[in-house]
Image (cartoon, rainbow, N blue to C red; front, side, top):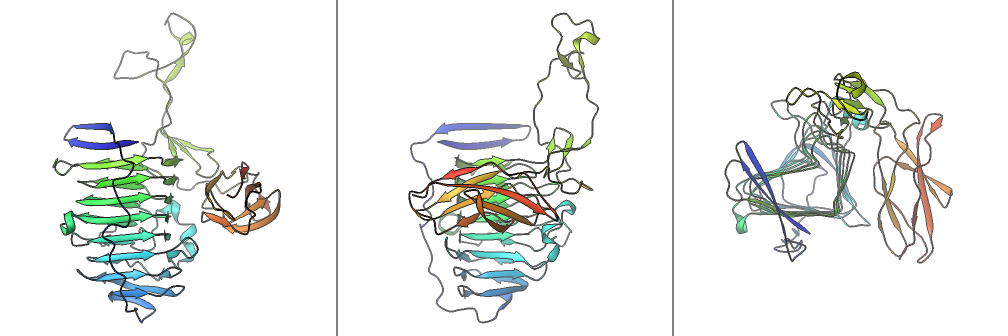
Length: 417
């Protein structure tokens, strides 16, 4: 297990790595605040609020919601909050989103175009922003989808933004665990300041547009980033820095995270995010065989680099450095796209699966033991319940569009236990 410390000095960045004897810096239940006994009465959420949103209830975000310093807003399991415009939660106190594995909390947008707006960098609501007086944030089994609506300057807003010099109890306390972030335009999780954070077992998918990171951690944050699945990051999947002021240092345990498809440019080659087919090349390949020159030795591909000697062997790397992360005017989906299926979790009688997502596909068909097709939406993960303990099951999935399906994914073999 690694402990990561980042020091940023103008013109120089040093990455130091050291072993640590403990696996976690953060206890998810430390300083856990009380849930308010009073309930929020209105189903339309706007203005200054405190109290609790009832379980299994639907609420509508009809304006910006403010949680004042010293106040708590809690959301019980199974609640759904639907943004009816570009509004956000502005928290100066405490936020508790108390989903469970069986009853998850959902924050989403009502916009019908929310699944198809990725290519135009369109966000739909403003997510969550926490100022320097925010004291405690606890988010478990919660979906936060389709954020990135523009601020007053027109710039997209992060899904989850905690920034400032927190002073409560030695800094703000942030727990983001067992949750899903999907379809945001700017940073997914942005933390800056004297913050202690536990970011574990989350699925973070398609976050960031022409800029933005899946996780952007800086200016003194400490804690754990572990067991997360990060799919299709537009820019960096996990970015750490301390900043020009060297105290406090950013200090994070980062371990056992899975990162798939970090960005959609390979060098300066633009590819379709669903099929990985070449769409545009934005440079001229400066490479030639040595047979085209007087370089001695066996024939090999050598590349021109103006910074070095005229002919220099350069290895090819898959990179994520281009400015345009989401293809514009990209080709329509075709059945060349094949999803990749991954086991996310299992219990004694259920399995939870996730898969690589193509935003042009609204329906997937999941097969159990080669039969029993189940139509599922594109949002992951998906749980199959009612299984028998100790029995082996196989699963694969296909993407479905009008009059066509993709080829089958890989097969996941699992035994509930």
